Image 1: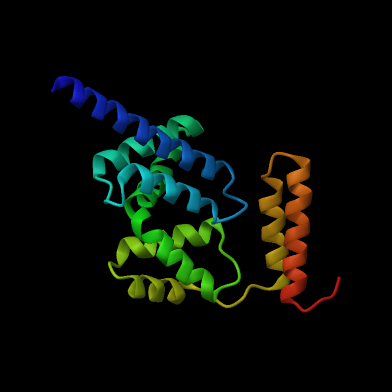
Image 2 (image 1 turned 90 degrees about the vertical axis):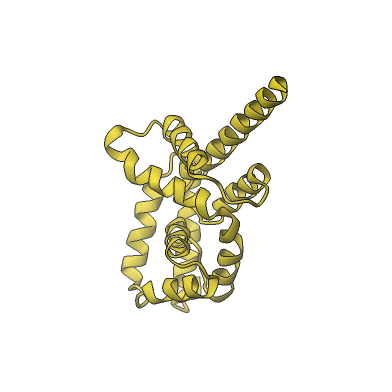
Length: 181
């Protein structure tokens, strides 16, 4: 019997580590897209079998991500909170994200985090989405959009990624402003 418990514990630890690695990778690429969380949700679903993750597992995943990302003590508090929020809401996120994407042009990492916050506050999907829409503001001015895009691009590591991200941001801006290019 003890060997089964040890094997279950090892599998659980490996699973928690897999969730931590998936989230850490998503954080590493977060400036690009909120769709990165789809992979995280898939890993969480495989590890937790669609069941809610308990607070101990949430904490262990957050610790793993902080270690992998090398977060400092000063910055890890809010970031760990985000990680726990992802793991806590993984089994509701996919449906909520699909519903949001169906009505909106973009789905950034920050939009995904806002959606997770709304899911945290509201138990029903419709109320969470209503809360999400209520938080939206008027469309930003083109110069603001371009400035935000440039800020995100500057945080990318490779020159090729910067070029591609800049072209995508410029194309999106032109499309939204009905500018042919």
